Image (tube, rainbow, N blue to C red; front, side, top):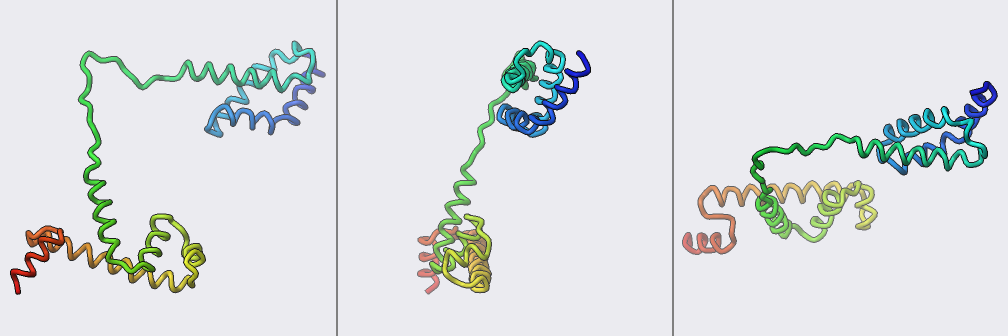
Length: 185
């Protein structure tokens, strides 16, 4: 390649680099892989630069090289599947405990006053900041903090009470507790 064409290619890369990198980012999700893809495409295009008669089409040419390179990478990827003589045991995640925890939490939330429940939901489930929660509920940030503190303390007390009920052998259900209280009277 002649010296003038090298300078022309360098100027082209300098002026079009950002746009070409954006194109590479659309082809691969990882920014580092996008940079690698663009560099590989530039190296491949550099060797053919003098063959591009209309330099206004260089972007299209480079994008095509990036697409082809990405396809090559995809085809050459290492597959994680390995053929074996015997199939492994299929394990199924048992989400029963997770559902039970969620049901317990939903049940325990009923002991809170509506304002406390709202603060807990916005701060912990919705992951709002103290200021966002205060704005959403029309209260001061200090009120949100104190309400949240009292609500979490109340939830802890309820959890401990239910755990001690289970430990005592009576279970956490309301009918068993009512039966126990009736027997004690």
